[in-house]
Amino acid sequence: PFDNDMSKILSYLRGGLQTLSEEPIVNNALVEETGFGLTFKYDDTDDLVKKANFLLKNRPSPEKRQAAMDFMAHNHSWEHRVETYVKLFECLIKKMPAPESLFI
Image (cartoon, rainbow, N blue to C red; front, top):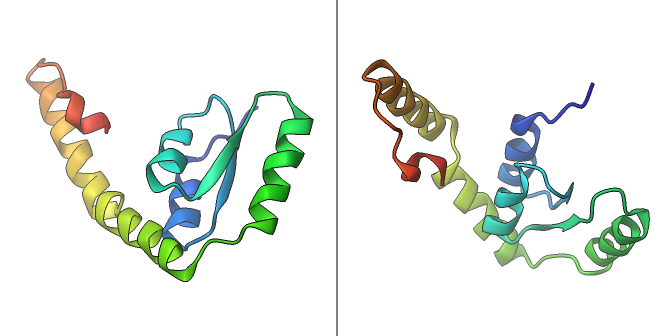
């Protein structure tokens, strides 16, 4: 079965590692938010190779790497995720729709 472990990309980006993600995967929003990696077209090996070569030839500056790490630490820490889950569960218990902001 397909393994789309969300925690992997969180760990990679928090560690300052650029990512290359296939479209359309839920993780792609993080790649776009941080600007620290690329996405390639589904089932398109030519696009995968093109994007991988681009990342290898265009290393990010230390400042861009640090900005991505800071963004992840602030917006996608485990503490932040727990707070989001608590709010989501509260909405479920109260049978209320979850605010859109929980999914951003």
